[in-house]
Image 1 (cartoon, helix red, strand yellow):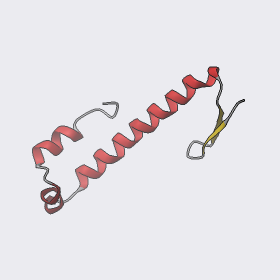
Image 2 (cartoon, helix red, strand yellow):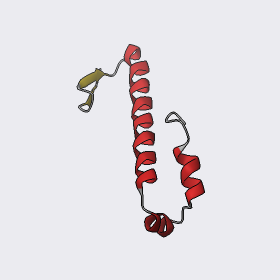
Image 3 (tube, one colour):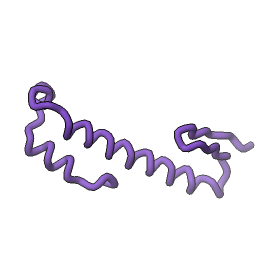
Length: 71
């Protein structure tokens, strides 16, 4: 039996069948990349006092923000 997964953020619905599993993997990878991009952007925009609160120094922020979104 096919199940239906919805991805409203992309405006699509995906049926769970063998030919679609690759498409679902691609969507999940894209979601992961978007998450990496967003969290690194937020990290870059944090003020110094908040970075101190969470125990991250500027060098670590530069290293993390400098990574490509796919890593």
